[in-house]
Length: 135
Image (cartoon, rainbow, N blue to C red; front, side, top):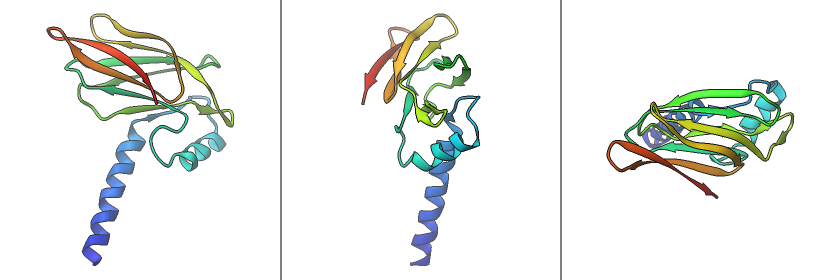
């Protein structure tokens, strides 16, 4: 019985560390916002935009929040999903401008609503394309 409990705790802690490492927040978010984000997230998707790279190409994501703050990070091919939190200034914002670029061209650029998923998929020979879906 103790072994099962230990195994559960280890698996849960590994999942929470992976999820936390791929969560991106507004640079201007204060301590109160960060506390609310961690308290309100019971599963991936609460007030977030999800970006999944299932292509063979590494991509770079640039984002601009409604308040003008910017965000940039890279996603390796077949990396774990990345989440951008839109919770700052003590409420959930509705959208942000996101640009996803491969080393050669822009895959996606536009205003993206909260609770949306951007999937980067393989396309033709050694290329990628982006698909936007809403939950």
